[in-house]
Length: 343
View 1 (tube, helix red, strand yellow):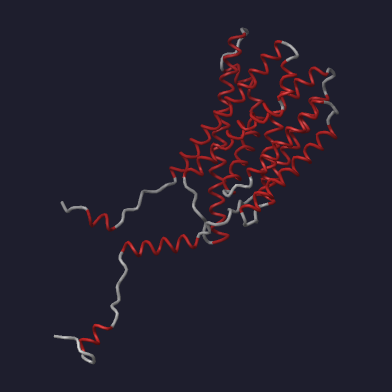
View 2 (cartoon, rainbow, N blue to C red; view 1 turned 120 degrees about the horizontal axis):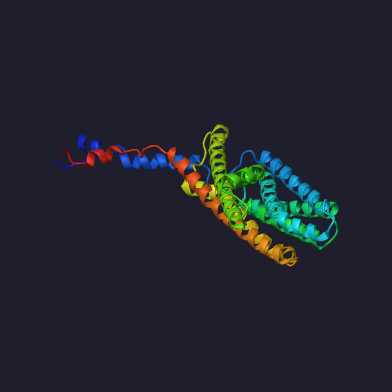
C-alpha cells in the first residue's frame, strides 16, 4: 500500500520516532556530565597552605638558630667548619621545604598555569634572598657563611619552582611528609644511645659500627613510615575539604599517592645533590682537616643517601598500602552479567 499524501500511513511515517538511549550511551552521557563537573583545566587548590608555610618557616628558623649556636659555641675555627658541614643538610632541606610551602601559599589561588609557575619561582627567589640575608647578618662573615647562605638560597628557589606544579595537593603532601620526617629525626636523636646498647654496641669499634648501622636503618624505616602516613592523610583530608568547599573534587589515582609517599625521600636525595654541587667547597674543606674528618664526611654522605633511599621506598610503599585498603570491590555492570552464559 503506497504512502499517499494526506493518508494516515504517511502521517505516521513522517513523525520522528523516539529512540531511547542504550545503556552504553547513557553511561557515556553520565561520564561526560561528571567530567564537566570536575574542573580539569586549572591547577588544583592545596588546602592548609598557610599552616604548612608557618610550620616550615618556624622549622627553618629553628635550624638556622641551632646551627648558629653550635658554630658560635666553638672556640676553634676548625671545629666550626666541621659543625657547619654537619649541619648543612638540615638547613638545606628546611630551605627547600620553606621555599615550596611559601610559594604554594602565594600561588594557591592563581588559575593560569604559566602565571602560577612564574609566581612560584619568584616567591622561592624571595624566600632564598631573605634566608641568605638572615644568615649573613647573624653568622660570622667568612667563606663558610657565604657557602651556607648561597646553597640555602638555591634550595629555596628550587622549592619554589616545585610548588608551581599543577598537582598542588601532591606538593602539599610532599612538604608535610618531609617536615614530619625531619621533626621525627630530631626527636629520635634522644633514643640513639639506648638503641645502640640494645643493638649490641660494645667496646670494640666493629660492634659500635654495626649497632650504629642498625640504629640508622631503624630511624630511616620509622621516618619513611611516618612520611607515608602523613602524605596519605593530607591527600585524603584535602579531597574531603574540596568536596565540602566545591561540592566535587577531582579524584587522585594511585600514581599521585605513590609520588606523595615517596616525596620526602626524593627531597632528601635532592638535598644531597644540592649540597654536593653548591656546598662542595665546605664539604671538601671539612674533609681536608684530617684523615679522620675525611672518613667521617664520606661516611656521612653515604649515610644520607641510604637514608633518602629508605625513606623514599618505605614512604611510597606505606602510602600505596593504606590507599589500596580504602578501595572497594570493582563494580560489576549488568551487561556483563547478561553476557555470561547460563549454567
